[in-house]
Image (cartoon, rainbow, N blue to C red; front, side, top):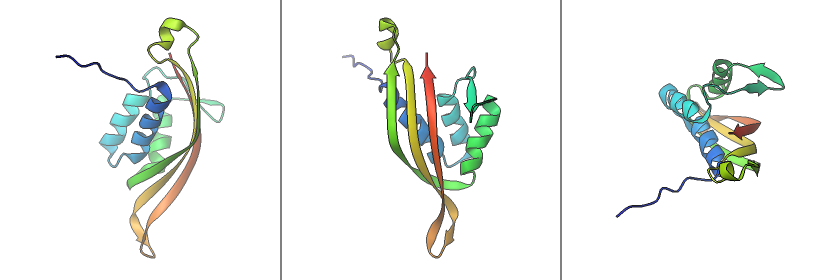
Length: 127
């Protein structure tokens, strides 16, 4: 008996990868999530300026270092499949995601965990 592997569509895949990044509780878990999401050959721009993959990794990791988890809420997601019919079949194209991550810290303030909010938008092109 064989079973077919069903892959998520590109917008769901992007949501899963972003959630994994912000929910990582250790440096190793973050590195694994980052490597599973961001290609070694990625072209990255932050606020319109080219950024290296390592700089981008440090920037994102700096938003969650020492945290115990996060609640990621997607405020909007839009996708455009690849124009090539064969490529569309394997889920390539572009995705724009707008999200908010409430990142919980280890410390408590007035009985509630310290939290920081990260609001971001991200454009992903998967070819």
